[in-house]
Length: 175
Image (cartoon, rainbow, N blue to C red; front, top):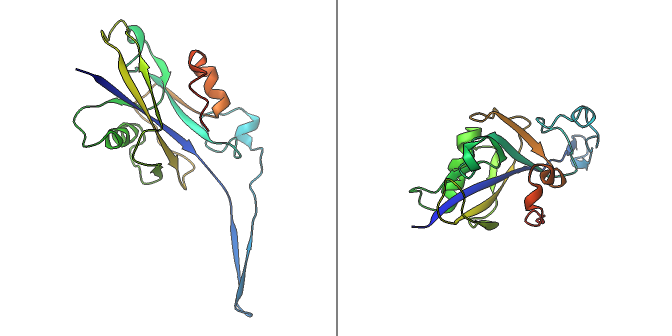
């Protein structure tokens, strides 16, 4: 029997747009008012805030028990779930993210297929190799989430991912 595990890469893309309407002339104008590139969260290196690195994508990492952690020790990982009986792998990925975020009304899954997968070789607690699939989702129109069911969490850039997963650097070459 093949074991399949799913991870959901939850990332943030943000922008700011101001629209004005001139009632007297019947025309309108769109003025782009960019948010400041450096925020208070950037200055204080607050990785729990979505209001940082506004010009970059942010990825959600959780700290706690992971299905693939050796010896059951807490580790940093993406939201994850072991595939059970969901209709599709994407439904399983949505379930994994909903378990942590609760409401998914501010998220968008990019496609129905996974963006990639890894084959994890044998580990202490899992006797046979298994596949770990990664699904990409985006946060839309939200500044804060009530992240639950983990000991800690961070929102990190792609470059910062390498601080948490140095042994998998060659895998995190995605855009």
